[in-house]
Length: 82
Image (cartoon, rainbow, N blue to C red; front, side, top):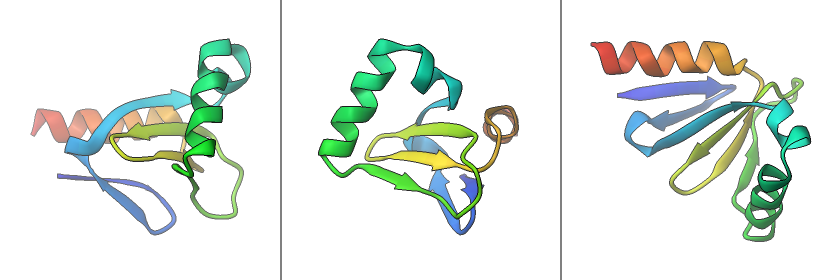
């Protein structure tokens, strides 16, 4: 199954590790370190031109998504229920 992250970006649900509200980046020292390392390794992708609302961590990349973490989590749960 697939999850639409916004814009034209779709990922396989099997690649999904975590979905976070973007505020975690500002409030957690460990999260800041994780993002810094991902940026050094060029594993960050910003989806679209809209304001980013969530952070999606996959096996290979970290995505900044314009879709809220709550909406993305609903999409992920919906896939696991079916």
